Structure formats: C-alpha cells, structure tokens
Length: 164
Ligand code: RP5
Image 1 (cartoon, rainbow, N blue to C red):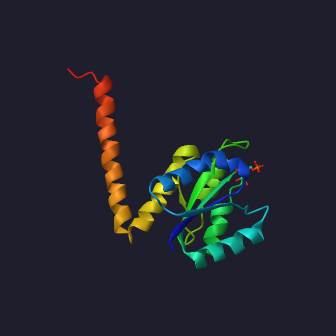
Image 2: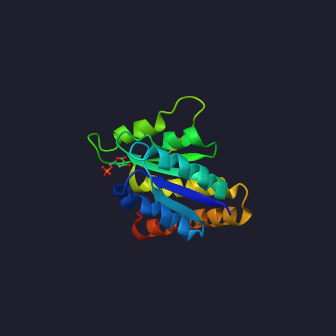
Image 3: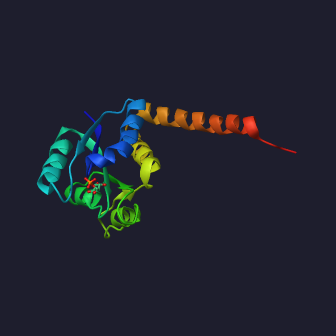
C-alpha cells in the first residue's frame, strides 16, 4: 500500500495542514496524519517514521513552526523524499520556520514549500507528483487538473477583462 505521511509538530498546525489532507483526498490518494514533534516527542517521531516506511509511506510531509526542525529530523531518519511546510506564528511570523526548514546541510534535502495554506496545498501536489512517477492513473489526474486550472484563468478573465 503506497501512501503519503503527514506529520505536524502541534495540533495548532492542523488548521492549515487540513488543506494538505483535503487536497490528497480530492485525488483519492491515501495518507496518514499524525502529530509528533522533533522537540517534544523525538522518540515517537523516529519510531513512527520507521513504522510508516515499513507500511508503505513513499513521501513524508512535515509541518512545523518556530524553530522548525521536524522536516530535518525526518530527513535524518529516512531516505524517502521529505517535504517541509513552514508554519506561520512565533516572533518572526514564519520567517524563522521557513529558514529553519529550508537551510538543510548538503546531502540531507528537504523540499521546502511556501508558508501557510499555499504551502500545505503545494506539499500535497508535490507529494502526488512524486507518486505519479510510478502511477500512470495519478499522472493523468494531475494533467487533467492543470487543464481545469488553465480553463479557470481564461473564464475568470472573460468575466472582467478589458481588451482594446
Ligand atoms: C512547533 O511549534 C509546532 O509545529 C507549532 O507550529 C509551533 C507552536 O506549537 P504550540 O506551542 O502551538 O503547540 O513545534
């Protein structure tokens, strides 16, 4: 069973990260979602990653705020792709989390997406694009979604456009 694993550092991240889960659901992609922290529950985090890998997790998504080390802790434990979603909040309103998530040392990659809801949704899309390399049906669904998005741009423009 292939699935995406979503881990967030705190329940306070869920409001944003539910958009990630909902995006995967729209495409019928299986996922697990848990709360586990790099700082508050390091042993649980490590144990979960190993168990999830054994069950079939193919991509990990880690969301954390402030001194955001969760994605890095995942990258230290697995060679599966890790996507990091920095959360807003804290003294620097997410800049701290973004820099903590993106600034990984050479050889230990974390694919860092945007802050907030756009990042949560993009983490789901990036995870699906990775799965779609070996899943033709999902690849077709992602291509169809791009066509829908392009049509929406054209239709939205038609409603308000001014062209001389
Ligand atoms: C991080 O600290 C969490 O990912 C969360 O974004 C932030 C604040 O956590 P709480 O104090 O709200 O639990 O570990």
